Image (tube, rainbow, N blue to C red):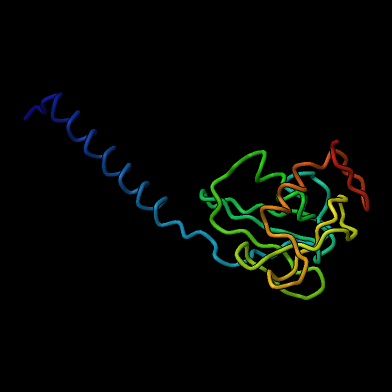
Length: 157
């Protein structure tokens, strides 16, 4: 018995539809990280300035809505990246400046004036720290920076 050409076309279309549905389910099942992903110190580059991330007390990490995990060597690099690229943020963390722990974007504030790898001078601390800058004020400070030299941040006039 001879097959009709349209029957092959229907079968092929059904196969393509099934494969497409499977691909969407697999992609949709991707679980975005809700924890900090370990950084390979002194080997992993900052997503903004490309310098190696070597000082845990100044690190930051972003998980985008697409599941991309980006790490930064300075809080200012993370804040500039967010301003310049405007990714969808799933999670954002900053390493505490003096303690071995991470602070979420909801918990963090910044003390200005410290020495940081790229010279933004923003140290991550808890929001309750007296005199600390809120995330929005720290972002404005990072956006205003015109030079990035270790230990010194200059602002535009």
